[in-house]
Length: 217
Image (cartoon, rainbow, N blue to C red; front, side, top):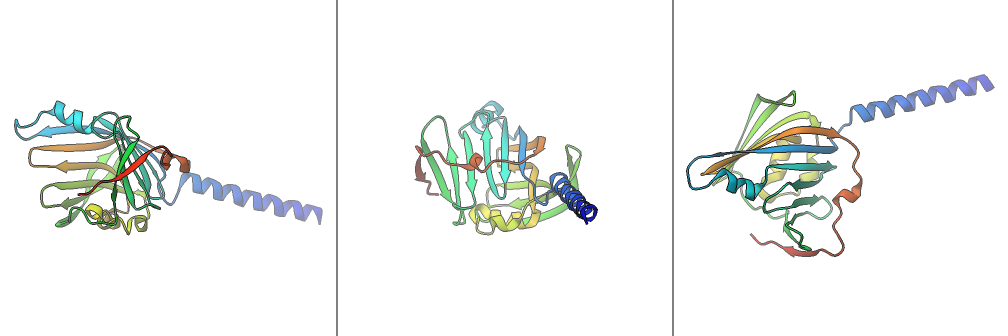
C-alpha cells in the first residue's frame, strides 16, 4: 500500500511538472516585453527627421499582459501610453506632470476604409511575418505579425477607437513591426528584442495622485 501511494504521488508530481514546463515554454497567449526601434523616411522638405524623432522618439518598450499594455518612449511628446481592459480607456502621460489625458476607447475615432492581408511578407528577429495593411482616409497603418505571439482578440472587442477591435480580430497577435504612412513622412517601428515573461499587474496601475482629463477628438 505504501509503495503504491508513493508511486501515485511521484506520478502526479511528474504530470504537474510537465504541465508547468509546457505552460512556461509554450504559453497560449503572449505576455512580456517587446522593444522597438523607430526609423523615419521623409517624402519632402516640409519636415525633418530630427523633428520627427523629437515628436515620436527613437525607441519604445511595450509591456503586454492579457490585453493590458503599457508603452514607454525614450523621448518625444508622449512619455507613456497605457491601456487597461477594465477601464476602456487609453491613457497618455507626458513629461513629469501629474495630469493624465485619456480617450474613451468605446468611441470610434478614425474609421477603417480598407484592409488587406498578405502572407509571408517580412522577417523580424527570425520570425516570418504576415502583413496587414489598414487604410484610413488620411494615412495607412501596416502591421507585421506572427501568430506564435498570440493574443485573445476578444480582449479588444469593445476597443472601437481607430478600429482596433477590427484589426485585432484579423491578426490575433501582438505585432512585431508597424509602418505608419502619412502624406509627408513614414514611421517604421521594428522589434529589436522580445522577452516572454510574467508581468505583475501593478505594471498597469495608475498613480493615485494623477489627475485624469478626458481628451475630446
